[in-house]
Length: 384
Image (cartoon, rainbow, N blue to C red):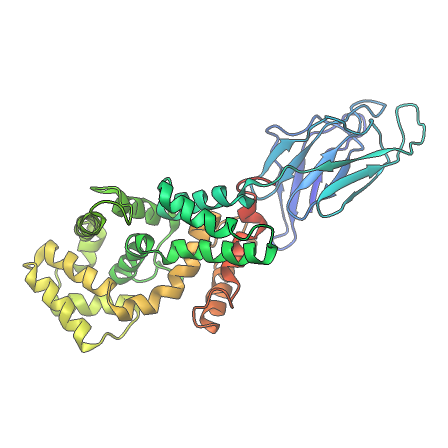
């Protein structure tokens, strides 16, 4: 529930959100909030509250208002161009695409038989070029290369006005960024290294929180060279980046504390155990050989860690887990337990992981990507 404005002797420009699950109140932001008023019109669009009209004194005199987004706790002013005349006691409804106000009383207490329609500006995420660019930024942490940008945007633009085609193409284009070589060999590899190195975070069903994961993903994607798959000598550049990241990763104090004194066999066994898999004998031998071939020490640990993280057993085991987690990290830009998650835990994450597992990793049948890219939380990152 959201309450805002009102007042008796003094009009208010404050409000609050009430969460019945936690039986708690949170004040709404006052930054760029509408002018204090009493008697305003208020409608709920499904993702935001629109406040309009009302009065600052004894008579209705306002034709401006604001849109409040609880997800971002922010206000955006409504325009006043061609707005309905000031009034109170009017009828207001949200139709699904616009707010309609009608009737009410003017400053002379005269009943009105006029009204107006207010439309929220279009959300830019609906535009294919904007949609694709955001995926480059949110998953690959870079601006799009022109050829890739055009290719993926055109996949959607080719649908023309066919709404069903557009929906399907947007889902598949979106999923393609997680499935891409560039992300699988950078961000997803980082996650598998976290899992193999340390297992899950204490009390959590995942191996990494977003902030450190994002920092490490950016590191492997850019150091020493910015990776753009398909351009230049990207294969060798990617390999160099992965080697550099793995070595830096195993040199961290936490990793040294966990694994620094282990011999090759014990070390490799602990990595597979942390990842929650029983490796094949071939995978175990490959990781031990990687450790020894690199001469042991940090170089050996880095080489064996990559061997384990890139093994089929670990990749298959963690694929769905990482896929679901990246929905939160990429689309929603938060941890699964962060607000506005109502329960402030991993219930939502667990729901989607169970559903993806139920459909054997088929994100289309599980409707997972569709749910995230059409969610109000995702859309409100960019507009109404």
